[in-house]
Length: 261
Image (cartoon, rainbow, N blue to C red; front, side, top):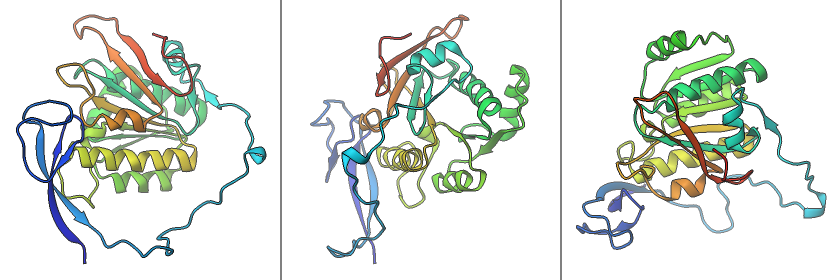
């Protein structure tokens, strides 16, 4: 039977401690440690793998045809990505609340659904009716754009298996939760677990996954710093919400330059 334990996790850097402390010993932030419940499952014995594994291949047998890219229909967005959307990539788009992350991503999703086929757009912050109102305002009407209002990451996996999308959009990662964890959505454990699931979907199926991430008042992405290390590309959407112009900046890109705006 699985044992239940508790630990204190820094919501800024992911540092774990068996007891609460006012100042995180790792990042130096104050009052960021939150108690989380951890369920420790009984692991299989050594030599008894719990799942099947793909065999290792000789490097001389692997093909290096280059990253397959797809245009998202917005030239500036393609340039920030390094020339288009790479198959199997995990892209994190961060920005202040109300800056327009959801607006630009649903436009990208619409363009990709027209050029590539089914696209799955999952929102954990808006209902399907609210997404429809925004799509009407933007003139979005592609029949291949599938919309779901869901926060359960297991349900998202189910949608991906059933609909077979060419691209997946998650808005936002802080709203998603893994029912196998007892901690609240948005905590370090939940963000890390949900991102792991999405990375597994992207790498095993070759489906590009876009993730929306919130930023803190200091301008950094909310949640553990490990989140930026888990994705292939990190884009920041910046600008004044009262102005009409925005800046899309790449701060990490495994498939292209980070000097593009």
